[in-house]
Image (tube, rainbow, N blue to C red):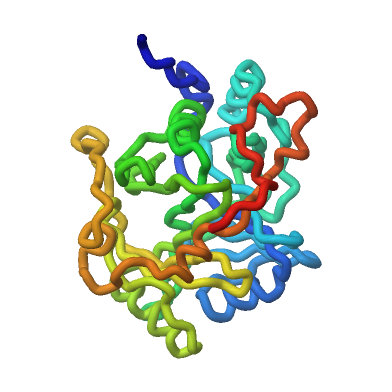
Length: 333
């Protein structure tokens, strides 16, 4: 008897995203989170509107972090860049044919960063924004020796079905699998960076952490030193991962969401790279052998709280689209 074939979302990608622009986090006290990221973490506030804040790094994106108010922690959206408005329009037609719901159809985005885009909903309820022609900003100098993030390096998402969600990012958004960590994590790229999205098998959908890339290993260490002077110690790290070969040091923000400084992310040669499956061993989790295993505290913070995302905003009758899990049921970390 043959095993059933896994569901395919699309025979060819709806769109090929080219970069991770920003992440929007929903938290109970966005002003407190803004103060942390602006005054301690190294980002700069570029726009503010009541309980919404937009913060930039030194790169060319208008903002890399958006903070909004919500009763509990949640992922508000992830924004990806596409090349042209026409790609946005083409993506919308393909999404419609596939029955993938959209929160926003193509048009001008009424957000501080401007642009032309759409917003789709993935099978676990996350809002994914595709945009082009956002407001141009000039890259800032890395301020010499100051520890200022350059961009969002990656976002790690907890998922109840790593196989299905990996296929979604590959088959719908055109990403490529760089590596697996056994079948616990998948690492997905859309450009030369080893990964911009990683998926982690978990008990419920939630945001695991957001990583910010520092300009160099020296800036990475200076960032850790800067937080130390503010009385903030790493929850895990410093160290260097196996998959991605990037440095890591994990902290928690005022909402108890996990944020990471990283640097020296592996660069992919598309013609030469071979995807591999890494064993989940201490020496591959941290090649330096200094950080040790993640603590119970940081594991709990990375697990987060069950996040329905934007399921409730999708047209009634689309329950068959979402991955089947009752995230409102009480379960332990």
